[in-house]
Image (cartoon, rainbow, N blue to C red; front, top):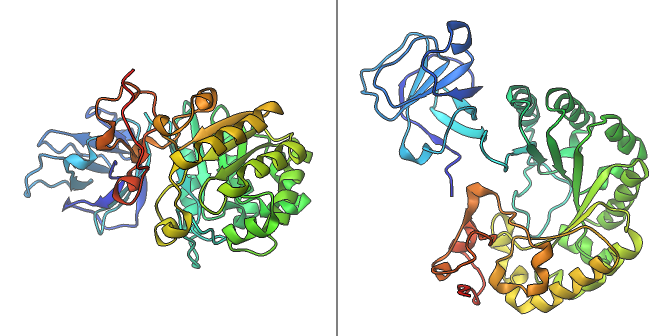
Length: 384
């Protein structure tokens, strides 16, 4: 698991607020560009003019009049040219926000949410964190136009209302060729005017991922811990498709959803056939999932036949299907056409039982948290 944030020993720092900066390894940039870059170096020499300098080889006496200078450990060896980080010069805190060479760049917009899902990986917090939206706008402005894909998540991003629309409009201007994924519970789109405002952004490659956890409204509302959420979510999906927006439905599989997984897929196929993608997803053991693990955990090997039946239902109706967050050795062979390596690279690992497996390069692997808490008892290397 990559270390994306932490505190760095401060060798020398100017006073100031936290800021975003793009990393470079080029020690010979023109002076006019240096103030907009942080230099990654293995040298003990401190060039002047860079906004910040990171090195593993500075002595405590190193100093610079113009740069914030930090000692950086091997935990951050993944940092590279074009990455973007947030730095607090007063505390030495650093957070990696964007990795130029990664296809897994998701930007947290808020920790506030109007759902309270039993398995939420980002537990809601009731406080003003609108600075995250402002930071996202800065980040989008710094990203190169060659960026292939980014995601926006929460909490619930649509709680910003017009603020989210403005961010998406900025993203379209700065990154018109970048695929953009928004994760939302969909409830705000019950307001048709908001769905139309979302459409007016006009980004050519924008998809919104919305969870539907059951065909039974009571069960869905229980999973998200919000009365009336099912009706609002379905209405939101209908409104988004009415204005021709790309919608992905996400179903997280666990003990509270598995009993009606096939019926949920039948509901989607019969009532929401026009959605663009359906993702059937394994459980990530983090956030609220850890506290509710006894009521959520079911070994994926135990439901592999149910998963196959659910996929067959969706496939029979011609829907675009993906199976996320599972391991190859715990699903049936008929899942192969829909199987995806989906876990973000920074939190994707293998376990000891995978040793000797011939399919490691094709397998989706495990969330890092699974190694600490729970994973299938039926993991076995595939040797033929």
